[in-house]
Length: 416
Image (cartoon, rainbow, N blue to C red):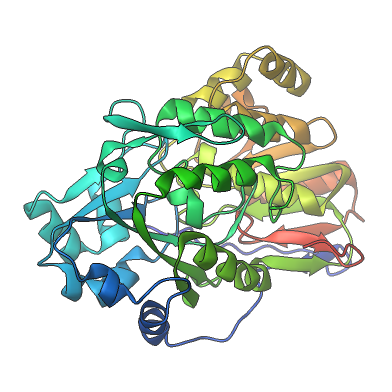
């Protein structure tokens, strides 16, 4: 799969506040880290003990929109499990099924072909798959999970922990909700994303996260073993945690903060925020670069999202809503009249346009970008020149080459 190409910009040193990548962390022997985590898991016996069974083991893996190094984990464990009763389901949430190329990216070509030949693969379909009702969260979210998972006795969730713009962090509980949940279940949970505490890095008081964690109580009849990774900016594994679903998730958070939370000395008039591969797959996923980029932007500033949007728009709900409204405020007014899945994405995008400008450099058509209230560009150099022309020659500039997963924090702000 083609990665996002590098770009060069000529920015005056007096204007450039900084280029902020995820923080550098020491490179590790990730094969050893995987092996050590599996041998010494948190709150569980070893993976070898977990997999020493005649019961079917259902593996939940992320789809092609996530950089999760599933194939690297599988390279370590597949020899141990390939002759067992195993079944793999891709946690698409409400995304589409993977393409053949994405299957190779997720599992590795050889393992994909082996599992495909044995009919041991499934892509979760939140609309059409058979679902099983397991109960409610305290908040009232009705937990309908894919029958493949709900009726399993053993489940292994493979994921990654990184900042998420409204769930706080990816990983852990997200394998189940939204990963393999019914559409209505996902919609009930994601409605909570409209709450002001539903922000990147926020867990305490974040209703989305708290609802997800509470909903995991319905899994008590399933023996769940989790394998969580944390990646650096090169998409290399820099930490691995395993074992109990919650314990392994929380254990990865400190490392994720170390990598992805960056200090900035000031906010800027212009922020360039890039959605890197594979998070540039569509507009729906690329929006995360806008949501993180806004944290580095001054009031009345210009936020330029750079994202290929390789497969187009993505989930249609938010696009239909935004394209039917003439302004950002009109988008938010429509959401108040009735929530549908995808509207949280529209709300997050619209909120920025109440106090700043959102521009985009992408492969989408001008009409598509305008429909979601983004000023359209296809050349970053042209977009930046126009932004400087509008904000002035002394305009300050911040660049976030990994905007989807880089969370800026002002130096004098102790949160993060």
